[in-house]
Image (cartoon, rainbow, N blue to C red; front, top):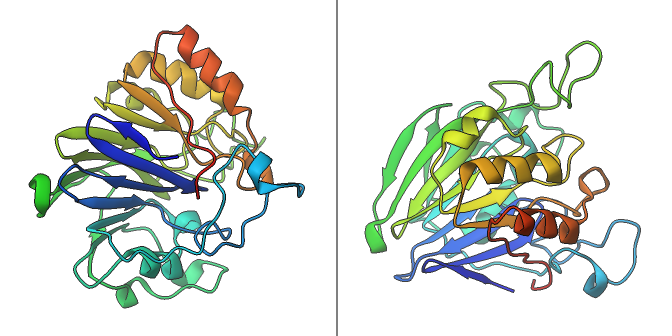
Length: 259
């Protein structure tokens, strides 16, 4: 289904792929692609019927309707998927540390993406022109803490500081926060956002319990979990997360069966 919140139409396609449209038709995508979620090739972890999965069904999707695309880090960089959503008028915002030459997948250089490519730093702000006032984009540091729950005995993590960012967007007057692949950092609690796109998969990102604690501190108007149950290391019980969030008095919604 598509979630409607404060004038925005928000659709989770699977993995981190999220489409957001304002009432006037400004369209933004966060981290589009990977694992077949936009090509129709995704299947549930362990097999089974996609209709029974707590996850959107994949689709062969090529809308090319984006005004804005934001990419957080290497793991979410998919040049084919960006072409499926972008066009020559799109602003494609890519974190400056994203390096396709070091990605062990078949991806194209950032310079070959459609539209206007903007490389953004770890703590930057850019304004994008367009209908409904366009968009404001803020990047924030996003990472696993070296002494945190995602670190191994040597302090090594999958997402060290400087590897990726999160994004706070202002679209049609509504603020949206997507932390990217990160722990539930204390700094996130200071971010003002109407819609919080929460990690709940654990393993290499924050767990459901950690994101629930963060949401309680952030006090968003709505929490929508994304980036779970696409692959084995991101499995989560979204229903239990929703119950936990609701008990804390924070509005929550799931978007799992349209695709």
